[in-house]
Amino acid sequence: MIVGQKTGQLPRALASVSGIADEIVIAATAGLDFLQYIKPVPLLKSFEFPWREDFSAARNATFGRASGDWIFWLDADEWLDSGSSAALAHCLGNSNVLSWLCDITDVSGPEGIPKFSPTPLPRIFRAGPDIRLTGRVHEHFVPPLEATAARLGLEIRRANIRILHDGYNTADESDKLRRNIRLMEMELADRPGQLFYQIRLSQALLKMGDSRSGTYLLQAWEQVLGQVRQATPPAEPMVGPLLDSILVRQSRGEFDSGLPLEHLHQIAARWFPRWPPLLWRRANWQFKQGRLAEAAGTLENILRLAADGNWQPIPSFESGILGGQTLLDLGICYVHLGKMDAARQSFQAAAKDPQWAQAAAQNLATIAGKRGG
Image (cartoon, rainbow, N blue to C red; front, side, top):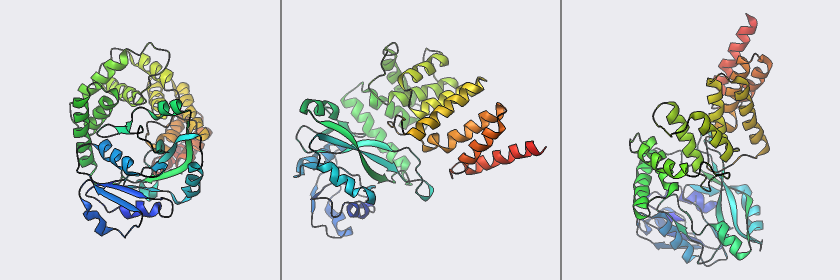
């Protein structure tokens, strides 16, 4: 773990691995004063690591201090779900696996309802000097764990382990965005042309209302444009959000990709056929084009993917697309298609999602009134 100045959530994280970890290694980037705010932890190995504007450097320092065969990485605003302990023990007994993907599950919404879809990330991996992170923020393994696993004849598997996270439920989101923007700008100055960071920086600047967002969006799109004619999708998953952003901005007249919207939607469908946000975006475009049956079919496809658990999980996205939001939109499609019974069922299902319950109830009342008339 890395511990900075804010330590209020640390006891929760430490308690979640009590009795599981053989040691707890913490890089203290703001000094060791945090120790006075937590109960004594016999297994704790903490050391000072002055902040260098680089999350990878701090995390790699903890990896280097670990003495066990396996490393389990947590953030301070995360904690291991209490029902995952047995699964974790099982994972560590497998000799064929290099790394286990754990579901990072957001619980920052009202009553712990997720704002974002779960994301499988490699938080458990075998200790080794070649397994290190890079990137000042949004850090990632280099070489990729997939390449290391192939070289060693090992596997990467998804574990039945949940890491809970409520870091989106903070009042300092703008402070985090400003920090991340600064670090991403530094990262691109260190290693220019990184597509991943161009896309992430564009997104962060857009959230802050910074006009520089368009500059990085264009730089990223110019890189991707060369891959448009390829039969296989690009290796970088963040191209999905890039396409989504371009579709939105171009429809508003804020960006010109050089391609018509129809072509962009075709590219999105070919490259990311199972990523719900792009499917949802396509359904909305079809609806506005008056292609109501196609829009309903696209929304129905999203719900099938959600029911089967067969959607592309990375990058994460707003959780309503897997449920209430899509059900609400589907119900509206059904109304326009004259399928009132199907619309009512869709609105009733959407009403079970607290975030969309009010809108669903209003639509149910509307169609009930029409029937009554």
